[in-house]
Image 1 (cartoon, rainbow, N blue to C red):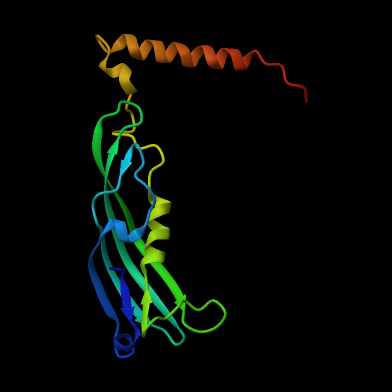
Image 2: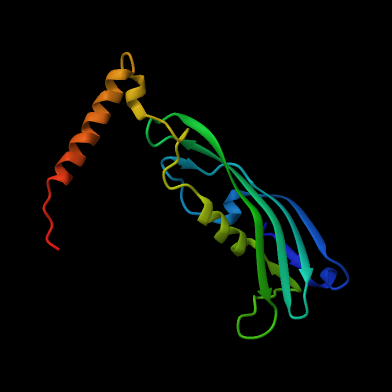
Length: 162
């Protein structure tokens, strides 16, 4: 069920909206190999009627089941939009569709959530990848460091014309 704002109720006072929206309702696309969308979107919003527009402000939270792209460890990540805000014109050329005195907020929630989804989730910022599971741990780190150093050494040898 989409997240709808009833414009009739909104004429007299601001509306507080809070709850959960099933992730399937957001239509965020197929399941990624490292980001799994299984938990509902949690929202706390306030909708305010402006003269010819609707202002919606609040917070969004979406827990994600992820796998680290470096070490493949499963972990949970919560993406948040702490200052969600959208101004929706109700009249004019850019007016949002009104169906049965209601405005559907779902497409606007979807847009902001898509912008916060991680492309390459890491279990921790300093994750060393699968090499951390190698015997002793240090040998994997050394080989990564040496590989990085040789790549920079090769780049330093380039002679570029001005």
